[in-house]
Length: 450
Image (cartoon, rainbow, N blue to C red):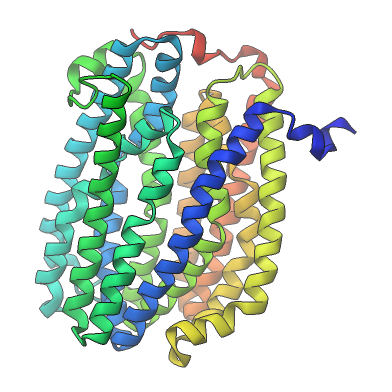
């Protein structure tokens, strides 16, 4: 069958572009993952398990607050900015990027204020000791930069995945170097917190600098002038899109950090540290799907959804990603325990049991990555929101119940169930959209201005 002729797939220029951009991101992510492991190893060996868990909880709190308030402005820029750039409508592109920048500023400030106000009341519940609240509040000042996705969207629309690949190395490199300095210099808990803080801040600022330089190189001036009311009125359905994607992605992006906080609240900082190690390995193993998704979404937004082309690309990309997932699954099952023991020390080997449970969902995670992008292409972002919300509710109920029944292993079982629920709830509306694809509109031929 022609559909299964892999050689024929690579004759498709769009498919080659997806893989090329994913390879840019993948090469840096692989190195970044290795650097991240070095950073975690230094932190794990340089502190007691309880202090390492506290560092994880502080980072998870700031990251979790940022994830809740964050608008997925990169999705908005790709959805509205790519068609505008394709038509050569720079005024509309400026409206898109200015609106996105305004949302990033507003959500970042709201997140910062909310995070600082709530922390003293929530710290003890999440396993953060009273003496560590001050340093946790300092870490919360990163929330505005954590929530900003405008520069990522700009670089994706301008097809500068090579620059995104370089930027992805900044934070893990600084964490690894700073972690080594803190470990060998015996700077303890405070040294590691400062290292993670500086690394996160530098990585975020680097992204903004790259986006500004690339806009100037392209001769696109005034694209980083923030605005909400004016652009929001001129761009059709802009508020509906950003609110829907914000809620949907806030639910899913908060999954990891909030999971760490729940584990810490129910089982203590040491268990939170073990869960963080297992989830870090799992996230690293599933990165190919994330990288393909980042490359896949901008490309299919340029295609006609009424044709078979974007849907065929999704199947091909899913099959390749699933096959990669199977290979990674075997590697993790064979080599996960000795790697964790070698990197973190024998006292953290218990995290491998969690990792074994979580990798059961790896193939599902990787093979289902195109579903969300297809729903956005089809204008079914509300269906994606319902899917995310339903999966998160199921996961939330399961993680509390299974932790009480099985301890930390229950957290791993709940993670697997949540991933499978999300894939199922995304698949159903995607199949419905494909069946009704003849009624979909092609955004590249339409202006977004109301």
